[in-house]
Length: 328
Image 1 (spheres, rainbow, N blue to C red):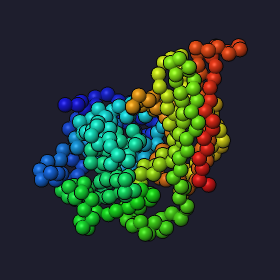
Image 2 (cartoon, one colour):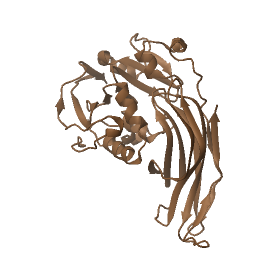
Image 3 (cartoon, one colour):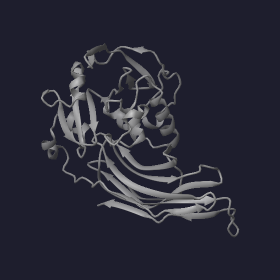
Image 4 (tube, rainbow, N blue to C red):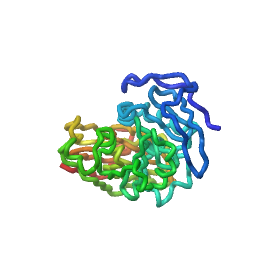
């Protein structure tokens, strides 16, 4: 059995504190009905204040706690939080290899660590199931958790289950008691388009041959929106150092905050993974529960090859071309 967390960080940067790991009184009463088997629900603390688990799914006590957790892009926090989430007793989507198939379009590692194997998590008083293939989010009040199996099967004949588009700010609509058709009442700002673009491939080492490439993308999951770049390469060694160069980039939330004219010549990754023989270095420019009104993201991947001195430098620098995506 995987461990519950007994250690943690003091998360002052997002207003979250460490709490000990102990049995917690259930925040929501009821039973989870799945595969015709009723399982009595017990809720436990995780080591992060306001983030709980019933060993089947992750529970964020409020949407504010959820947004604070996913919008903190400090690389140390992201790494520790990701590892802690996949170390809990509930089985996340990240930990179920059979789910990694063409039928599941959720390709964000951070989000996969929050969802259980049924693509569900609880935020505040609601359960959210993300179906990225159909671009839909199914929502069930947590007080009706005995109807969990209907949420898994996306049974819209159950009048307690509401359906939203991944193109909506789903959490705010749900908590405001609005439907997708009423969303203009809440916020009249435009929605940024979902766009992606990939750079050229650049060889940074001839023998063994090592190439690098970068893709920038804006993805929408209804309860989770991210503007990021993924740089890919093979052969993860100290003599090849990878960075991101960002130039004059900006984003603005719908009816929310913004960042303007951000540039950096050698930003390090915020997270990284390996899959299919490729190392994936990731820089997230924006991540949160609210979608963007507009953005301009200009970025390229750079590599310092310390096998090859150049002039007065101890290394030679290689760059992909800039990739620019925008929805203004």
